[in-house]
Image (cartoon, rainbow, N blue to C red; front, side, top):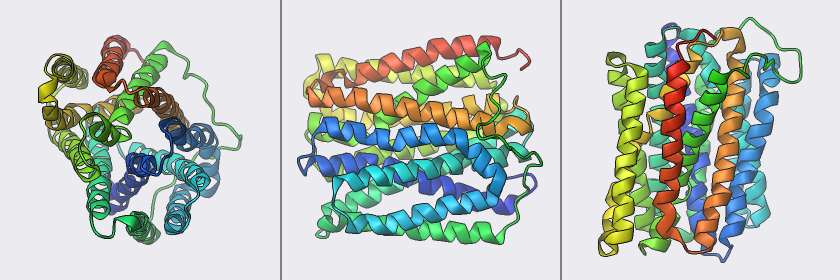
Length: 394
């Protein structure tokens, strides 16, 4: 995968695979804790304990990574995740989930900045970078699929009460990834950051503001599915927990397919055109879904199959828009830029989770698809403006 360090491909993919599972287990946690009579408003704020530490620490993570090095920082983050996963099955208090997600979020901030930095330092051409990012980010979708499928089977089995012990598998994968990183040499960037906060000068231009706005709403949309789709299936479509999780797994499977196909064919197309076609397809699907919800409710079960198809077109958006901008960023500023991406993403995720919990609390889930459609339309308008000026030199 990498032009200079092909042997680092597997641990990079495993890193995203691990963080995908621990971040996207939020949907499982919400589903399980809601059955323990924990209210949706409390569960809606649970995501903030993951996202706010990501938003805050990502700005300081650049200094941390620069001081200790990319390799050591990645190993530290993965080790801490692995240890936290070992403790989770033995603690029942709700407050521990808040602490657990805060630690996971902090480690993710470190991990994502390191991974993006490694990719940028080994790729220069825009389409090659897009291909690489889609390939690595595809493993993120495999993690989402695996965590929903695996926990779905575990929860529905005779050992369902021990569902939290499934996190021990992720812990083992974390320790294995640490072993792989320890074996390999990783080229470290030459620049060293000495300030507490990264140098964010130059990121206030219109093109950056538009980029971050597009990223904000893409994450807004993704989180609407990743964390809340199982609960939507169960509460609104009245399916059991097992089927709710399996149906959500198909969203991840289609998302993986979307990113894998994109990594194979992206060099044949202009990035902006590819992006806008994907957004347009999502709009069409959501209009069809909304029509079924409002005018053909007796056929609502077909939504179990329509929602996952959205993943085919949604998944490529984030890697494509990121790769187009990252290719323009100087290598010396890539960590600072990635820290802003992580911050914006986490803020979006937190705001969305609180907002969407209101839909669940007030049982107005008929508007679930319209809520998401509004965010997709924002992406379409903002992305059109972004691509229009993206030819400008940064």
